Length: 430
Ligand code: KE4
Image (cartoon, rainbow, N blue to C red; front, side):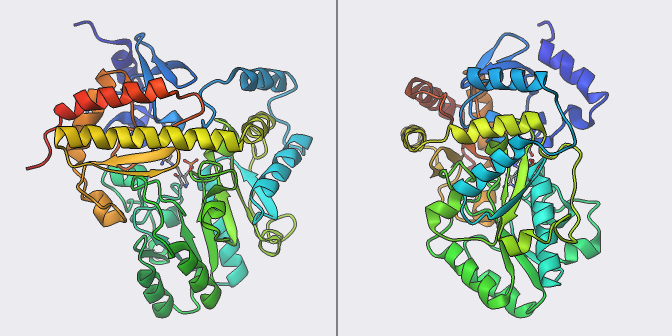
């Protein structure tokens, strides 16, 4: 059989890009096979260079809540590009997006735009360390906050997917300042606060975990973190890079009614262009240069094209959109549950509105240990069978399936039909 164009491109890619990709999980290392190279996308569909199309549930790992290439967004970007792609100087658009963010997320009194979620979380931790004069942070096993050194300790997402939750190259002293707690186990955090009293600058948490697969917070967990941080004088950082503007217009903090001191944002805030942001209490954020001494900078921060896309994406958020996405997410989650029950395959589907994860496990899945007990070989077989049937889920058991306003009930029903067939291919671990 002649070599596919994707395969030819992958061979060329691996001679110049480590693993042939610019982000590890894209290489399909955890699910087998070779990744299709994408030529274009529109709505909920990806089209690869070999003429195949797929219903997309990666959606660029979360940013595309309105779908791929919405016509009025691409029109706005064309016009913006004609006015210049980058100035390295203040623009009205970055003020407009900042005002939008502060209005949608009231805990954010000041915000700084950066170019990725990684930059956002790195910078938020720097502010917390400066404000408290402390060095240690608490993160949760299985949570992923980008590839900053301090976070690559028992990290989720691709780090877990590829079997390196704690990355080589992270200095021992850095790793020593990162304390690990168990998600949904407030006692594990309390023990760390007692053992490291007055040394913990911040607790950083995904308020709805998405990087061990989707794991919602247990009742009282987020409130418990708020109370421990208040008692311990630590900064509570919500990493809402996934849940921001996904869980609701105000993110997970609006859904659960818990107010962090700092919030990290990404993905949806850039409408598919590279934007991250961190923000929160004015007394903390006014420490950031040039208002204060905590240095943080970026050549392309506040980039006018990215600000244009972010303004468009946030301006299109509506109560109707979230009602529709929640309904679609429930349809898909229940469809997958029914398909697995009919196939006799143990499957636990964790869902949070329009993002969900089918774990190949009898469940429940409430933390990193129960998530990583899932049958990743079964997920890989299921993934390959879905891809063959024109459905593109995330190439990892430990990621979320994202829906968008471009997905339809027909897409979801087609996905569930494909899942019924694909589950017949899955041989659950004996
Ligand atoms: P980026 O630096 O990738 O923009 O954001 C890092 C980040 C921070 N916080 C959370 C909660 C995140 O989920 C992420 C990035 N998410 C992964 C997918 N779960 C990005 C995909 C990839 O690494 O290729």
